[in-house]
Image 1 (cartoon, rainbow, N blue to C red):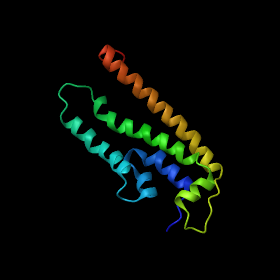
Image 2: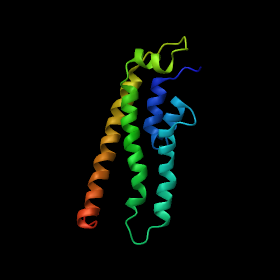
Image 3: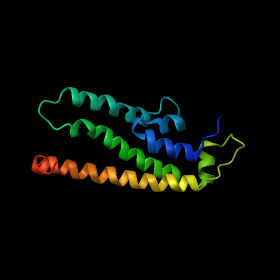
Image 4: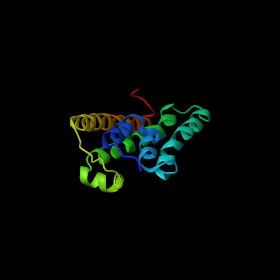
Length: 136
């Protein structure tokens, strides 16, 4: 069994998390939550291809929800203690996880990106729902 790197899993969740790449790295190709992340792309395409007079923001909504979920998962992965990480993902590996400052930098970046996407999504959604898009 290959060693699963916690820093790499966090970076994958931050950068490609809305497509579920971090889930496939950790759990293999048949991970149900990873497939749910991947399905956000065709769902967004279906919404975009069938929108008649609605705001294009609604086509991006599945990807934005998936991105927020991936940021939460990145925080959960990165904040897992090294001992618990090794017990869950690296039990058969002789290499032990030793988190470094790069992981801390990734966690701060994840928090900033995730909070920005979440607040922006909520504010745009409320703008469209309650004012019809009067503010943008």
